[in-house]
Length: 506
Image (cartoon, rainbow, N blue to C red; front, side, top):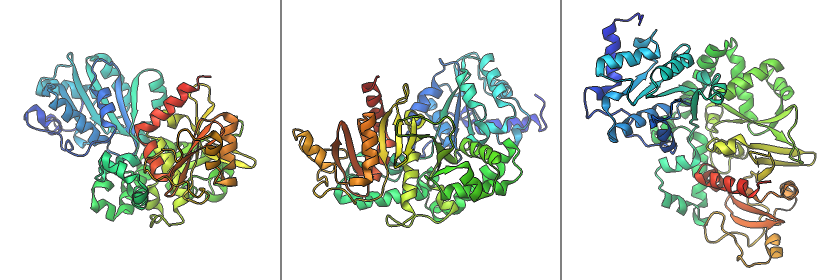
């Protein structure tokens, strides 16, 4: 183990990373912080020593990856795992410079008696600081298959080649997105029974205010739980996330020399978040060459700063060449850092950012995020379309707006339950159809698209109104945008999508 620092210093640092070796009451520092909704599925993956693949935890900066790892260690200890069979190391520590991953296991065996031939857990944080870490992780997993190896890194430097690695079966990759709206509500102090009470007509103004707060700072756990961070949100986002990615991560990984050019492109994309653009449009607004734009878009998407959606036509067909596409900020909170925050529900900047927030919720559902696009043709557009994962036919459709205009009088739902019909179940189809015609020509493209593709479930967001209507064989749910954001970011979206996919086996 060639190393520049004295061996005693390295051992001291490793002992500090693993206080439970010497003290059976020691716990990781982040153990008591609120858990994200992703904890349970990630723990199940990271704790199972029977799965002989390393786990790679990826995600943008400041979304709670390190906290998640600490909570995995704490839960293992609470469940009775042998303390000396747990190794944790944060690789950005200067003391670890020049070490190989296998060196840590050998050192832990010497210091704590870790037996690499028995079930154990080896966890490395900030893996991007390790040169050629993929090879080292492969070597570690092959040499000691009894160990469950988990590594974590920010998406910008570490996502490289992960798609190929996962496809080849080398690693199990878990993506941790920013906080969803459902998580934001929970971490802001709401319990499930309180959330249900939020979804009533009397509390729509409160729900809308919470949605605005979420768009301004809700994507990052620190901002949700810390008043100090929220007080200077622009500085937090700019220095801790955007500048570190644009000025450090991406230039270091891809050799980008003109950081200001990359900054300029991100500002242009933020101004156009949710708008359909072409590379020529972006070239004209940013002054960046088209070939460079293609690379920069790939880099920004790999860094989880932006999300692109592909276009289909009214027949549901993809285009061979994606000349037009939509680009969204991956987290609406980034607008606070780049421009001014949304001041309230009446802010004119809310409408375009609302669609960005809804798309951000799709990142919480792997099934939905992989199968979402938008539709546009001469004379019509559907904001979001969910495709069947096998045959690619549309099964979900969304129209995103921030208005109650066009909802027919008498359609407002009085029972306060999301998705509950406003008419009795035995009402005739003609009457139910008539109840959904209030939006007139504004929603005609959505109606036509749903009818053409026999889409069984469609959503139209409103500001405060919620009801259900029928057009043909399609059920249209009109519901406040905050309700849709909550539904998409909870398990409800997975259940709805799975049910529609199962029903449409053709």
